[in-house]
Length: 106
Image (cartoon, rainbow, N blue to C red; front, side):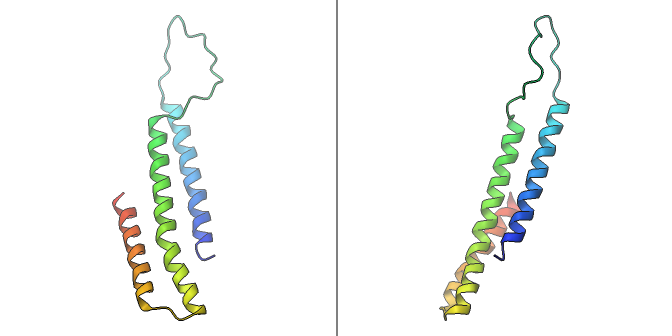
């Protein structure tokens, strides 16, 4: 539950960013003019390399967010119910730190 609100906000902003990038790509693409250009212009072009690269980065960041926060939050919630070895808390913090480092480096 603690990661639900940031997860929702992250998903909304990533969707808005992807929508903006996709729209700007369509505005910037050059128009090919020639004799045989009687094709239908109402068709949506396929997703380009730029959008695929952005989508891969967004998915990686999403997975790093979930993979980093879930163990830390789970250990904190479980620790309120039962007594855990402090090693579990330290391991979950290390996973969180690695996820933050991966997010920062990408």
